[in-house]
Amino acid sequence: MKYNDNFNALGESYVFSKLNALVKKKRAQGETIIDLGVGDVRLPLFDVATEKMSTTSLDMAREDTFLGYPPAEGIPTLREKISERYKTEGASVDMDEIFISDGAKGEIGNVLELFGPKANALIVTPCYPAYAEANTLYGNNITFLPTSKENEFRPLPPYRGTFDIIYLCVPNNPTGVTLGKDELEEWVNYALNTGAVIIFDGAYSDFSTDGYPTSIYQIQGAKYCAIEIRSFSKSFGFTGIRCGYTVIPKTLGEYNRLWKRRLGCRFNGVSYITQKGAETFFSSEGQKQAIKRIKYYKTNAEILKIALKKAGFWFVNGNSSPYVFAKCPDNLSSEKFCEKLIDDYKIAATPGNAFGEGGEGYFRLSAFPKREDILAASDILENLKF
Ligand code: PLP
Picture 1: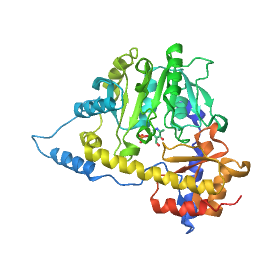
Picture 2 (picture 1 turned 60 degrees about the vertical axis):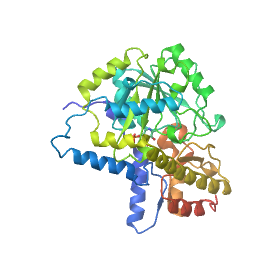
Picture 3 (picture 1 turned 90 degrees about the vertical axis):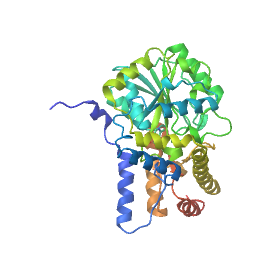
Picture 4 (picture 1 turned 30 degrees about the vertical axis):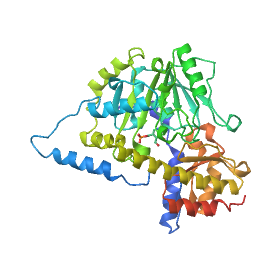
């Protein structure tokens, strides 16, 4: 049998598996563990989305309203709504530059098909592990760009080496750092000067506040050097429904045309039911509910930060993320500290090294759990003694 050797380079996702196994074991032993390691959302879907999905599903049972395959690039009404939304963000994106997907994670790797084998990718560390893993599976060359406490985890172009692909996650998972207009301008200019394509992962862009850019296309020149990937998962609770979108500008070389060609041979579209549900995000009720949901998670993050501050932890400051990224005390390694947190304090956090070497010595707390769990955890965290 023939196997893809790149799986050997990929290895096991051991940090996450180890953590999950430990939480499972503790719970099986009857211990109550507050799990702040989860990146999945906790609030249920809103009626505005579920009602639309229900009626669309019932339409499928009637001969006159039944629909078969959806268009591979997405239904026009949803693409139009996304295009309109970009206008309100101060960006101009035509509907035929927008492609509906089943979420951001797959697209992070799917776009690699545009570049061919052995592409050179620049990936910020710490960062969402899917970038490095997808590039490893494709056999690409990866260069990591470290960020650290010294530069407050704010990535700047390396001005050394040339890359085909640059992944930017804004706001970043796990650090929560969001980049300002000036910083994104530096990245766009760097990409334009070196011929790189930025893959802008805006999975958390709806969490951006204080006038920070929500789209790379708010930056002049970005439509000549950037692909943007966004998702309904975190701000609309669609982690289980699966819907997102990818923008490939027509001004970005041949990539828009190639992507359509790729869809023709690799994709049969996202279900009508899902896309109709996603459309409600753009209704006034959908927006009201999404804002409420984001506020809930961000308040959770603030509660956790207050507790960490009281206990004397250093953490990345910012108000644009459902995560809190903090330094382990006493120079403990990420895994040692997280083990201790579970063993002694019954709180599960994600070890920073799960997000790459740049995360070693840190841990991530998720603000997605329910408020009661956040409050219970913060009571414990603020009294941590190391
Ligand atoms: N991008 C980042 C930075 C994420 O943290 C996640 C999920 O945690 C995703 C993408 C995946 O999003 P989706 O649910 O749309 O696949």
